[in-house]
Amino acid sequence: MRAAIPYRLLNKIAIVISFFGVGIALIDSGFTLTTWLQQLFHFFYLAIIVIGFLAILDRYMRPKTLLVLHELLFNKVAIFDFFTSITIIILLALHFTDLLQSGFSMAVDGFVAIKVAVFVTFIREISDTDFNLKRTFLNPGQFFILSFMSVILLGALLLMMPKATTQSISFVDALFTATSAVCVTGLIVVDTATDFTTFGQVIIMGLIQIGGLGILTFVTYFSYFFKGGVSYETQLSIGEMTYARRMGDVVATLKSILYVTFGVEAVAAALIFISIYDLPNMDLSERLFFATFHAVSAFCNAGFSTFSAGLYDEALRFNYPLQLTIATTFIFGGLGFIIVVNLLRYLRYRTERLLYHNSYSNEPRYNYQPWLLNINSRITLITTGILLLIGLVGVMIFEYNGVLAEHNSIFGKLIAGFFTAATPRTAGFNNVDMDSLAFPTIMLTIFLMWVGASPNSTGGGIKTSTLAIALLNTLSLARGLSRVEVFQREIADISIRRAFSIMWLSLLVIGSGVTIMSYNQPELDLFKVVFECFSAYSTVGLSLNLTATLSDFNKIVVVVIMFVGRVSMLTIFIALLKNTRQRNYRYPTEEITIN
Image (cartoon, rainbow, N blue to C red; front, side):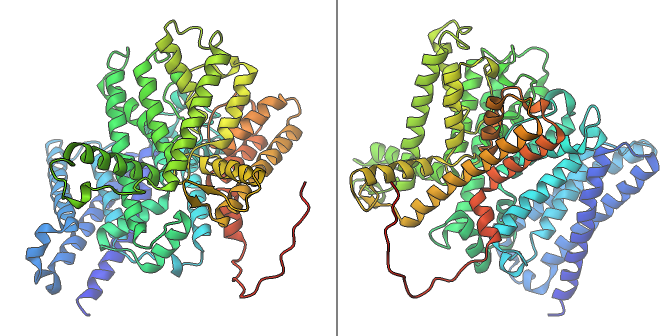
């Protein structure tokens, strides 16, 4: 017991000073500081790294740890700590070598590796503490909402730093941009390409990644990675938000989310980089950043671009491989993590069965496995496919001689049309001039924006499964059935009630937004306001060139709509209203006249 006290004390000290170190590193990166202050901060960074290194040594030098030292060779945490420590030692050696050669006169501003080491120290130490949602003052829904609000506020403050922008921006504009990034919307009031520096664009990309996955995903996974498990209470809390069927699925689901996200983003970045190899006026580092930024923005369905005109820029407008890559990426992101994992598992099973079934006919895993593609995946994939087909046909009919006329080949029109039909599903990238779209196309776009992506995805909207359940319920009523059945399964009543609640709450929020914005700026085109509100609520990011003309008050209104659309109005109600216990009795049932 005595040996554990110094370690815990050292761990707490490392957490506190590394937390302040991360904040100081951000200030150091975002502001132009005097040389003596930079030097002072620099020594503080070194002190944090040394204390973190001592905490790692103390963690493995305790008697209990030394007894199982042979097991550490195959421990993932020990391997991480070993390579992290070696890397930090090498960085420090190189750094002090440069300092000695310069006679201790080398500028410390911009030495990114030291700041990264401080951030890694903070993540490592805080992940070794006990994280338990049930022991906090907040219920899971409140924690989920508060985490988004905290990241948005922090992001707004970071984007206001002088080195993040080419010219100063107001707090409202910074808050709007941070909300749009965290809520993976893509609406902008300042130009991402020209008004933000590379540092500012990196901040936006980080906010997009955190907003797309959720801060709870990172916190829980790091806790699991370094501690080897997550408490039952925390799993129960996360299961309430992710609707996990079994407690054992929670950590596995979070791991799958991270693996799928970073795997798809890495492949997308590589393909994007290849597709822009001949892009003029861009060096290698700029192409790498372009590919990484757009891969993250696409998978998270954010719609941010480092080009002022987005993919409608003259250099990208006819780059069909790029458009096809980005479209495929945001469709994957919009399917939902659980659906993608289930689909990949099903495809692997079908491939293995096709290749090895005859050779290993007695192997159980190659035998027929029913319902490997579950009902959620079937409903989502079918609804997504139907909506994509409807969108493509509609765009090709309405815009063949319109915005698609500049594409000379049928192949080019199909790719551009497919992209235009897919991007309203909360992606937000534009490869055409939105103001030039025909009225029927805009109406189709509003409908597709309202539906949005799929559950547990990076996209917004009421979700494909909500639309599918509502349609199935309507068909069941028309047929005189008392149950909703599909694929030889009955849909639970709670799913039907949740679907209709989500639909009417979405229209309530959008309608309220349209009313307030039109009242504040009566000179605005009402149709454009409606389009803007649907885009904001569904976290799409498409606009009919209205966003930049909004007043500060209306920008705040759009911020609220984006936030509510991202976290869901139903989630807000669940977080605010106290849970009522189920009673052991039921009142007599009465049928209400509806039609």
